Length: 233
Image 1 (tube, helix red, strand yellow):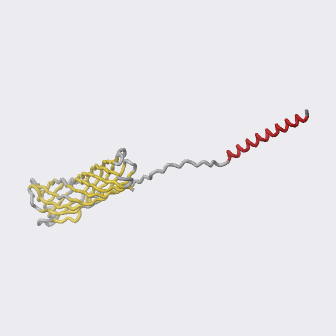
Image 2 (cartoon, rainbow, N blue to C red):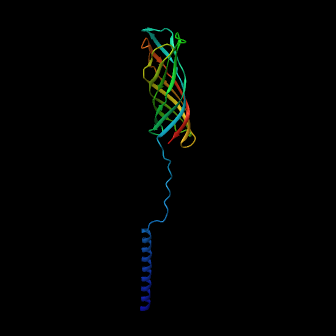
Image 3 (cartoon, rainbow, N blue to C red):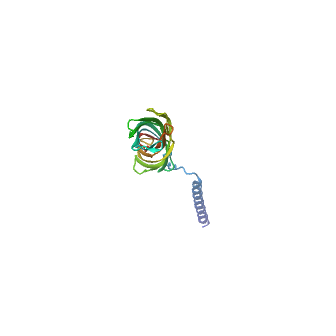
């Protein structure tokens, strides 16, 4: 009888030891670092706020003049301003994916002739530096096709003015103007695209010829029609 009791006690002791060992092994395994590999985070394309464009620009003035000779209006007197084709550079900075500012840089030469009652008179020539700052809204839900509209301010600097046709002086006063814009980029890949852009600048500088003998205001109001290449950083 005592042998049976001893055997039972030994069996109980072995069972308790096995249970304790199993619990300790589970706890130890829980404390070990996991060998599973964490899933890789998706690679995000970095967004840059900078864009530049290079365009060929067709400048088409929509001229109209109000001129005076010695203080008296020249009835029917008008001017004709030549068109011009020039290169243009613009730099854009995006505050968001929709809102951007664009600085337009370029120079353009023009000849000025008389029209109407002044037809046939050569008046002068000048170069224009018209930096323009535009505030733009870009539409971004049309895939590679990215249209935009803009409004801004222009300040035109006239330089290298030369009188012609017997006139002794020709002077245009630097002027501010309002600019409107519409255009689009069509992106070929993440960085490169093509661009088409139209701007209208409302510009009316004061003019003096022969030291003020002829004076007045000239509406230039040019259309700026451009096409070129876009690069997004």
